Image (tube, rainbow, N blue to C red; front, side, top):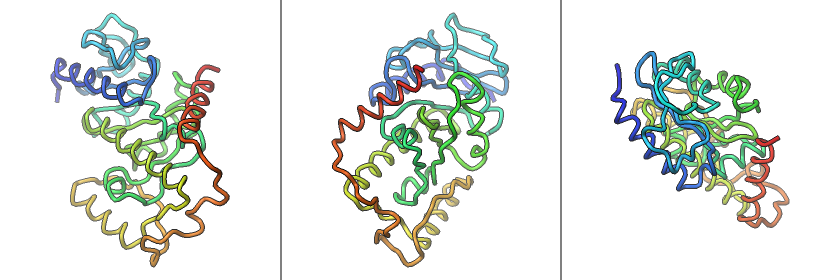
Length: 262
């Protein structure tokens, strides 16, 4: 089924502004796309800030990456988007950004795979880390493929985050959920207590996923069956140092940009 090109352009431009205004990207970072039909996708251009895009800036590609319409050069990571559409027929929107907290966990090598927040368990499940790959090449998205069947959100090691969905707004909302989860978990770790939900609680939430028609596996790590909301030794960081949040965010951001510019 073909989707209205004008509507998709307007939607991507609006989402680009949200991504930029929320600080999920800086400068010209990130890329967003939507499937037009079985043979074409609409993708953001390279070298243009997501916060200042216009509908005419967007580029139409075929599934081989050939430009069909548009005067700009497409994002260098357009083939990551194409691969998501090729591998998952249910995916019609892809969002890639560098939200600070989620990217911080990606830089630290910590997956967001604990069963902590009910809303996240229902909408995302666990979020794995795909091993580092050179941006702009197939190496960036190839590690994602082993998780693609059962997940809609991914951390990209030392790079950022990737979310997919049945439409571009859904993919963007998953990026919001991912970053919100990462922020809350960061605060909980700083406070020294991370309560992981037990098996029974998670089972009830998984049933809700099925009720809402969410069929992906996307499992997350649960606490002991009798844990309830009590933290275990394994879920509480030992010898946690004092943390200046703004300083840490800056260090995380600097580390990401240093790796990308090398």
